[in-house]
Image 1: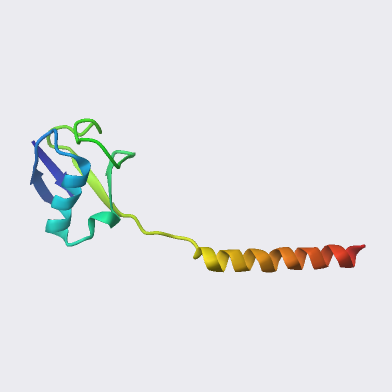
Image 2 (image 1 turned 45 degrees about the vertical axis):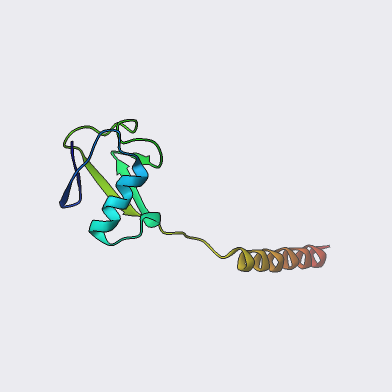
Amino acid sequence: MQIFVGDRAYEVDAATSVESFKLMVENAEFVPSSQICLMNGSAVMEAGSLEGNGVEEDDTLEMRLAVPAGMRKKWRKKRMRRLRRKRRKMRQRAR
């Protein structure tokens, strides 16, 4: 079966796993497979086979990059400590 991701078409089997399909996309697009997030409609495909995720013949999948966000744990911990200390001080002043 043929599946479209962006401008490219991929010839795959229905029983192909999502991980192996991500590797095929990685070889063609030069994007690490760990950062590829494939979407079929509004559903994110993470595990299982393509058929199990509802992908059919001539479907178009959307490829997004999974970018980790947020503060590093160490910085977040330090910031939360500062905020707690500041709140404690403000409560003490209010008494």
